[in-house]
Length: 199
Length: 272
Image (cartoon, rainbow over all chains, first blue to last red; front, side):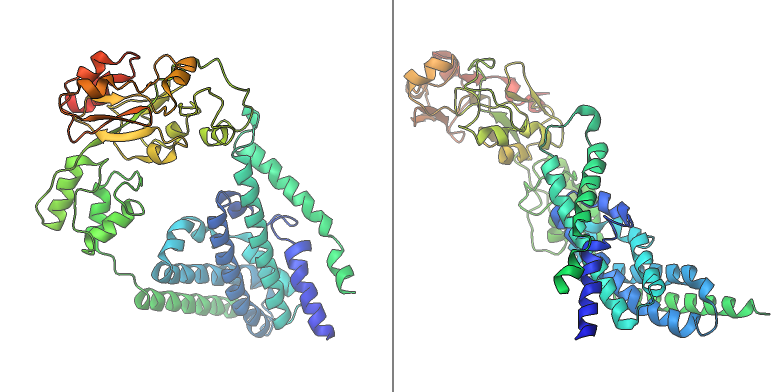
């Protein structure tokens, strides 16, 4: 029971409290780039969840059974980048074959997941936080869902922005960045909420 | 010598990743029809959807797969594109019925004189949600330029009268503006047509006169004078049947309010 509780804590923490986009400011590029339409934002979010999960499934065993065993922990970053880059290319090939519509709508942003710091960040943080394999998977899932949530929420905000009266100097990117910071600020309201619900 | 272990490890990992990608690219390769890409390059790329497919990619794919055999569906592309497509597919080319769009509103209902001060989003769609817009005429062009925003060729401008004006020399007849206009006052006509009714008002003549000097009052003079019987007045508004119209222009000369227009302005591209 305690284990399950801690897993749920990790999951919800990743979604609401340690939201990578809104609290740790990782993965801002797709957050601003693909958030114009809710549909595209959802597609991107799902693709990132998928890549994150696959990346964790591979990088955690690699770190534990290869890097740590041979005392090569310092190779972590470069090895993880290599693995993630290869995986993203793999996902791209699969998408092109089976979901061409999603492949086209993601366009240039799918290759950009290759160097997405949110994916690299979650795999490295899983190791530094000392999570075991199951905890790592749950943490990744939480972070991915948090990314999806942030994307979809912000896509909604942006569709409202399109019709909002806005001073000329602030139109476009400036007002987008300001709204992003307000959305980020609103997520601070979740601090401490998850622990208190479960206790 | 310690350096050799990490080097070997990285090489091994790199080789494993390369093997994975090579295998994937072999087993999940996508067979693309070369003709689809060629047809796609011929098409204008406006993705307007007037062919009935979800954009130029969809039309090119349907043509290359043989699901669609008509090569003349791309109105914006015209005869040139139809010929190119037919050449790629090895079929005989067929002619495209070229169309242009026109706005059925003269904009004579006093642009400065509004029913109320509209302060919402500056779009026709937004303005139209409140009492059919801020103009006295509920059938009028609202002039916020939703059509101009979607026009892929920049053919639409808003005149000083506050109505949309379509430059027929730039119009490719894709019909995006027709779908966008919330008042449904933009129509497509064959580019050989010369006469249009520039009004959409279905109110009774007396009430039209109160706010518009050029609105159709449904008097029926044009209907009587038309030698081909191409004009009918229904719902207090004159309609032209372009199957019968011979572009004689006699309706224009009898119209007491001047809402029927005639001339090359409809189809400048055709006459140049």
